[in-house]
Image 1 (cartoon, rainbow, N blue to C red):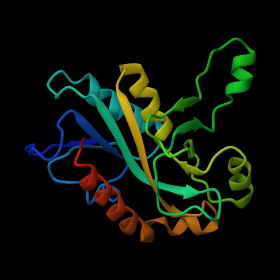
Image 2 (cartoon, rainbow, N blue to C red; image 1 turned 180 degrees about the vertical axis):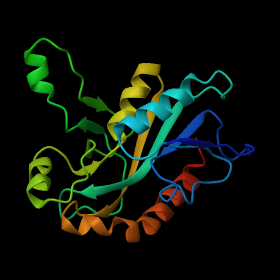
Image 3 (cartoon, one colour; image 1 turned 90 degrees about the vertical axis):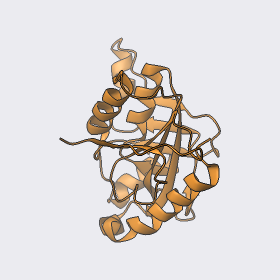
Image 4 (cartoon, one colour; image 1 turned 120 degrees about the vertical axis):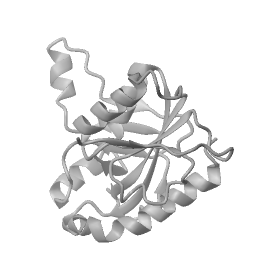
Length: 198
């Protein structure tokens, strides 16, 4: 199994209609115990499969909002801290070419209540300065699951938010991600505690 759902008894503090989604347990380490949490695994396919199963499960509580938390690489040197992207783009699909052939591919989603930043999302782990520079022309951050969450949320007509903490600079230093994830996870947990699941 590449995906697991962790559910705990709901407290009045966290709205049970909100589903918190994380790629890894490390990023979700400080999610409040009362939150509904789905750990999907890394990448678009795993996130799509796990989230689809969770939303289609007739035994699960109804979901009105998905909150995707996780780490992201900064595509600009001045970016640091926590971001609430307003747009997510799927950067590793040939959407213009497919649209030119008559296939209406969606590769961009608007996110309500964002901070104006743009998240580039795809299955490529960006650790190459040349690739980083190319993505930086269109986005502020890069991750591996945000576009999948947006895609599934749209398919199920469920609201979603993206909450990303910069863990690296999407260059050769990105390979140190495992050593930096705990600090990012604390910021994500603090953000969830502050909003109280509402």
